[in-house]
Length: 372
Image (cartoon, rainbow, N blue to C red):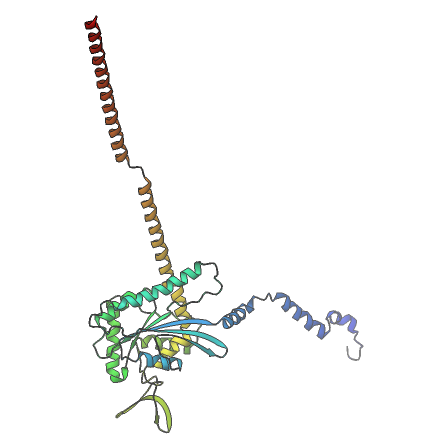
């Protein structure tokens, strides 16, 4: 009622039960700390360990002489390297990558190039074998991974698609390494010609059942920009590349490209060639997936086949030892027969000797009687 004194003790008894503001805040914080276990930091731990250890990546470049393999690799890593088998230490923002580049000089240059694939297959298998031996050894802490994670296969722009030698080599390699086809020196072709050539190469790859590297599907939670980028990368295969390290000036700017009478081809311009997309795929977005496919698919296939062949060889050796150690019953039978013949002959000789002794005894008896 108006003017009447209100007793707060009777009207609002719950106000006394509330803790002070500072006490309430500390209780909530302690509760959150109690619920925090700590495994949410596992990605950070893995990241720190991986950065400290560094990464290994081996890239093989295959193609005829004169298609710009060395020039493309020099541009890819921003280094000038004399390619045969070269290892580079590249560091970016504290992340170290040991990049091994394997070139194939003189590939397919001979008149009879039917066996040009053997050296490539032997090299890939040798790296698998070395990794298998290291993995099966006693010291497994510091295994060096020299397995070939990606093969850039350069296709000549001068023909009408894949040559028979290209088909043969890729069919020998596609179960052992991730093949990424490249249309080399694409600046000698017009844009319609590049598009037609790409379609022809993909058709021939499909018709010959050649398995090139397949880009993984995007996760549903990826943003739209990444999905668009992934679609562009998949549509660019085979990547049309231009190998050029020269710097030209255009519009007051220095750009890396090649000057023609009709204009300038910019290596780093996505509308001129696919070099930027190739570099993005190899280094920025799909390097780890290339390593995973190599380890989980190609190496596991080799490992299973290698173990199976080793077990078959051991089984064959054991069968041979059993055959060698098995008694030769025919030889034993022949020996027994020979012994029986010898025994019979000895018995006949003994009988003849007894007869001769008997006859000799009779003769001696007759002589004695005659003298008497």
